[in-house]
Each structure stands twice: as C-alpha cells, then as structure tokens.
Length: 148
Image (cartoon, rainbow, N blue to C red; front, side):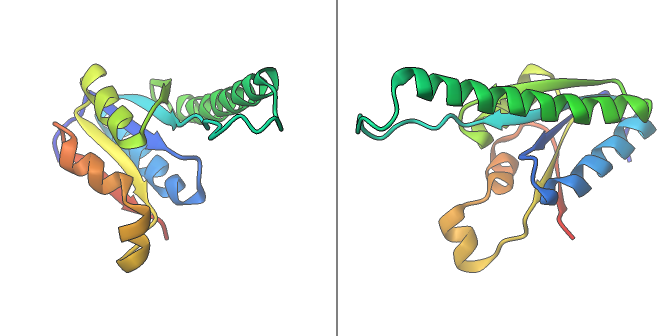
C-alpha cells in the first residue's frame, strides 16, 4: 500500500464510524500521515415560525449542538495523539457529502476514510448513502469501513 501524507477521516459519531476511526489511525501511524478528523454539522432549520421557540432559544440550541460536536472531535483527536498520530479536528457545516469532498480538497487529502452502515435495498434508496456520494465525487481514493 502506498504512503499517505494526509488522511481525512469523517465521522457522524455513530458506533458504525468507530471501525473506520481505528483503520484511519492505523493507516496514519503506518504512513506517519497527518490525520484530519472531520464531522459535518447539518444545522436544523425551523420549518415555520410556529411560536414554540424564540430565535434566542433556537440559537442556543444550535450553539449547544456545535459545542457538543467540538467536544466529541477533541476527544477523537486526543485519542489519536495518544497513539502517536498528528491529528487535527475539522468541524464543518453543510451537506455531509459536499462538505467532506470540499474538506478533502482543502486539506489535500491523499485518502478519505469513512464508516458505512452497510444499508442495502429500500433503506439505502430512501436514506441514501453519504459514503456512496463521497466515492462518486472525491478526487482522491476513499476507503469505506463497514460496521461490524
């Protein structure tokens, strides 16, 4: 396998993403690559002003979600550093597949590592597959690691 200089690992913080994190750490250690640990935040948008939540309440909710994602990313980065991997968090906003592809270009990643839930059939058709979209759009190789 070739040497990688920059690896982008994207997580949704689900249990299905943990095997991919372990694989990204392993590859980063073997290659002495920098690891970018990314999470895409897709903000919740109110559908209508129904009067149940004020703008301040909504802004506080969004801020809490953002800070929670930062804390989770920081824990993953700290874990990577304990394993001897140079790691940096990336908290992104937008559509997951677009943000991951843009981050891969911006960081000049040699490899993107993603977990996959392994959905098939109707579930995949209706829920879509972020991994499949990233594979189709990324300009570098994408490694998907299926949850056990």
